[in-house]
Image (cartoon, rainbow, N blue to C red; front, side, top):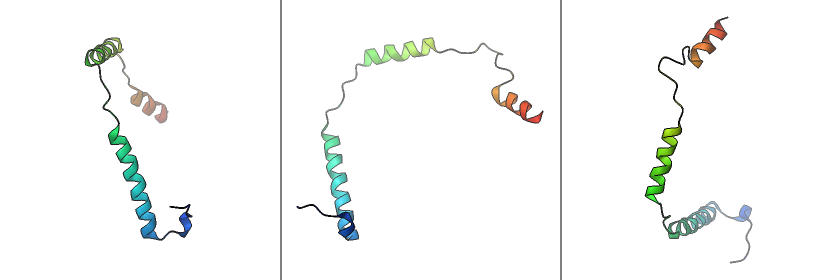
Length: 75
């Protein structure tokens, strides 16, 4: 098929072209192999993230950010 100008297409031709492009891209996407996930490494990574996450001590964080902003606004 030769080069065509989009402005010269009818609405139906444009819809058909869009559907064709989407179908082509979806087929290429679905043909890609499933990525291999190392579940042991993933588990270790998630555990490491959880163990290194900082948590404020109980009772800390008072007043909270929202309370501080409200107090600032009220002044």
